[in-house]
Image (cartoon, rainbow, N blue to C red; front, top):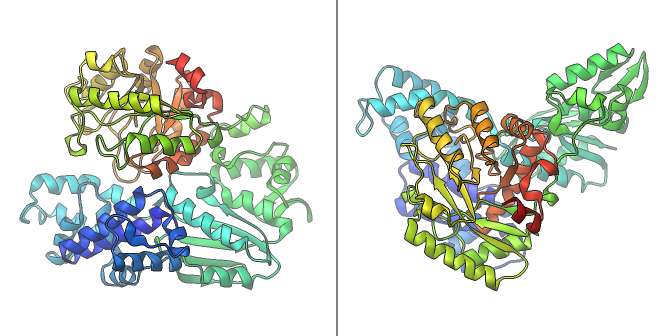
Length: 568
């Protein structure tokens, strides 16, 4: 299990225990443990395997160390399993509503006996929530506005959860002697931002072996269905996974079919029909004769197309590009040379300048920009002009002392609600790299949001707009804006656009990233890392870029340091 998965168990424990009204010190212990685990570079699963004393880590006592070992070994926590049986899933789903935490959910559950999102919606519509102490009409209206988003989110999980779970299952299945091939399929293979369920394909000499292995896998909570060739299980994360066992002769056809998307497959099947062929999950057939199916390459060749990367299979022009041999050579993670959005202990990060620089260098990066928050983000210890200049001086000293990587003095500067920048131009002019962002006032009318963005884009010191819409995937819609106008203005003012790689953001999305590319706007993929482990999310940003059809040439931070310096 990854550190993030182990930490997530403790965060869920804290949330559910808080709903039950547990001791605040116990909740704090779990949340502190989760924070430590997420911000530690060492793999806790590996530490457990090596019998390392975990109490050397901040906030980890003997009891928590024992719990971490159990989670790492089994993928489960007995208390969390018990809490899930006691607290209805509909109550847990309420935690997905923006602005609603465990304390509010506890009131809904324990005071009003509400156990579902539908029940909460009905209570809000009838005015019952406004009558509760500490709530009021404003809170009630906010819940009504956001509850549908929570309902949608409750049925899907982040690509980070989906991918780590599915790939762990596949990795373990491939260790079985009887298994010849195994792969993730479905929306997870296409790297969609969220997944409703998971699909895994296996070819093997004995159907029972992989099914038995999956049933006993540490990530599997329960077996929901088992047939001759298909097994459905529920993982401890709550997502359901379908495993299909297919023959080697049909593996490629099944992989193509179950990867999707449905819209892409409709076009592929029509191409087959036009050529007197039939395609299904078993293969490509001319009459009763199978003419292809062992590999995806064979399936596409049968309909006179080159193999199409899964990330592009959305019927958004990839078929036409393939016909003309114009499929892009998609970006790969090894082509990224720099990371230009991250935080240190100067604001709300968990690591020092030196620690972040060393972690980046060990990952093969040539340059980074340290971009701590500006003063508007007071909850994150944002920097005013004096503190920022002092911070930059420290960055310059580290840059002189460290070898193998270049450090830029940067700032994540808020675009304020009144359409001004959080720091004066005099200060911004001294920066190597300025990331302008919307953090507050995301509900303002479109006219004001656009005024704010144009203020930033037209500022001569702004290099890039970070997480441009301000959305949180499945948690918060982005600000209301005319993205076409924003991108045109960015192109006119030589301002870059960010794909924030954190799976909770992935902003720009794939559609807008492709639109930016078409306007010649350089894209920068950054991690927004707040710890040394924060760099690990880079792959999700690369996947988003691949879904947008981006190549190395479209992404500015694929340039070497000398090339990027000239770009600046």
